[in-house]
Image (cartoon, rainbow over all chains, first blue to last red; front, side, top):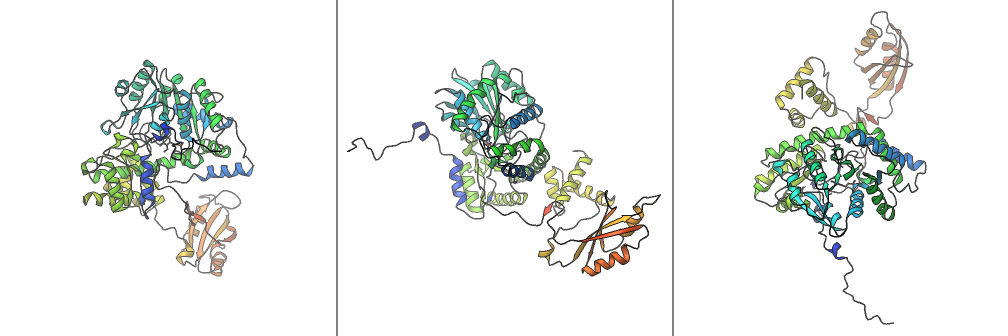
Length: 393
Length: 165
Ligand SMILES: Cc1ncc(COP(=O)(O)O)c(C=O)c1O
């Protein structure tokens, strides 16, 4: 049988996927990996190993043979504990039956909510510099990500008036991430209130990625979901990766109004089925007995933050004291180098890895991201090498 | 941070690493080295900080010293309870720690010596005869796994990302 239609050069990749940019971090990652002895402040995950109590609970779950699927929504015991935790820590009450779903990290939660709410051509406003997945997770649903720039002068808080300017009849949602990756910025109560008012007025859904919320070093304000009129228009995303040093467990959760959780559940059921069961049991242990470990890690991050900010300012890179997460985002423009040139030069000459701000969107130009989820010894070495690098420019 | 909070934080850091140095402490706590040095001097002076020592892997250090935990039963005294006996025991150079504990016995005493015989002899001839000591039980330490929050053996390294989003 002859196949006259065969085309050896055929491009099988969907246009909207081909159109996604390669993550800037991936290029940089390959370069770093090709070198030996790199001191890395480029890692967006805790340097701590998961606390033993949590690891032990994982082993115990395996020991008991808990290796089956769980309910699509996740273990009810875990959903109960998550809702109790969110009620206590964030001031919003959710029903574990119907208003909460356990996801494969916040990553899946993001994907679920985007697929659940977006029709082709819909718009989602997010603030930049931002976590690398935001724009692609919107674009993957044939919707349009719309970036609002945030600035160092304002602690990288997104202004309600800037958001308002970008609202169109197609705008469906506002995606927030505070404490923020990559800037470490946070929102004050008043800033959240202004955004909440705007969302209510302009009928926007708010998706709030609060994965760094426990890692807050100043006053911790309530979630935007707790503001008047917001509970019914907010999807709250959270997870265990950062605060409990459980990145590899891949457990997160989403809380929100029933119809949205139901819609997310449909996507999850057909694409993921459920999150890993024994990892869910570990997450349960984290919520029940992990507070002291969590606080110990938070305290250590806070002190490392203090050190790294002093060092950066000491070498003439201006950098404000970030209020959350484990990142600082110093301005390096005064060196005359672009973010990419700075990061490449530092890697090449001093074997220190920091991530160019542009990996987090064009708004990150003039900055680099340094993660202080690294040992103090590594932070000190990286800082003195960075100082040498700048002095030798 | 109040002075009291700062002192607590300084103690916390010194307990994890006594060699950390005043300037790192100051940087971590957003204070200044002079203030930190003054607080440490104060705490050394008033007995809040009683000393510093290194935690050592005896095997690697080539430290052949013998250690034993001694459980000591003591007849408490009308005035002072266990204090007189505990202090008397603590004065010996061979004794490196003394704790009053709840349970089957009263004092948990750690003794060092060059050989098993030396430690056993010390217990029999110096510790047991102290007035008020009723009985002792000696446990020689065979291997140290963890001390003061530090594991003797390090976890194995494994492949972790060097850059991640
Ligand atoms: C802002 C933000 N959201 C989500 C994630 C992904 O988290 P998870 O491990 O829960 O999928 C990260 C991880 O770096 C992040 O920084």
